[in-house]
Length: 362
Image (tube, rainbow, N blue to C red; front, side, top):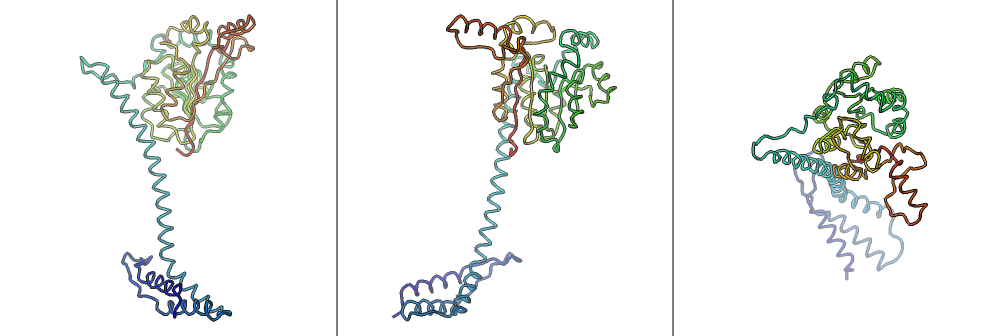
């Protein structure tokens, strides 16, 4: 009487032998007949081991094993091909999903522009940014910055704290773009650090002076230029003291278009006056007549996060009193705490930056 296990093994081999396998060099399916010799061999080995005891010839076991592997190989190869294709499809779907989300955000913004003028049917083009220097002559604004913002050396020293971030950017994918490059302090720092970068400004005097110093600066509107760039073509986008000159929809455009233009691992750096400092928010902000309105750090952080950046960071900067590093927001419980709170609100960070990074795998 034959062992049921042996019969089951034989049936399995018979079933495997009858399956269709695809030849690697052809698209035609070939049907293999049951390998009856293999079935008999495996049944004989099973019966010998179970009913007669003793060792079965090792060479015959190896022959059975090799024939089983030959039968299984086409199925294993198919599984490997499937696994590779499934992985590639998953990566592609993730990329397409990210691009779709960004496209939806852009469409929503465009719809908002169209709805702004329902009576006239005239859509407002958010790509047309009103340059701050258009409201003052170029030479007057240059003199204004020199007097009230500080010398180029002073500003360069302050901006040098961004260099550690710049050094981590994927500059093999593209350069760093500085929108509103002004006197070129940041571009000069990047050049001396060996990082590829170029700037945009609408002030002809700033552009001419920067070009004379060997910097790559072009007289163009930053928002229009950014929107026209191919996706993933920049390592970084920086804009120092620019967003306070823009309308809210233009700030949104800047952030969302930067997310599209940046390569995976790229970063967006936006620096602006800090309205949480009471002296800035109520007084010094309005010293510059080209400023539109202050931008709250939590709002700027929100729209950077919403555009697809990873965990946008708020970086407090430039306290009037170095001992007042933070602006207090909690009620003071003691006289000393009250003094600390007031000092923070009056002499704390005068500027802040929001820094957003794209995931390296995006």
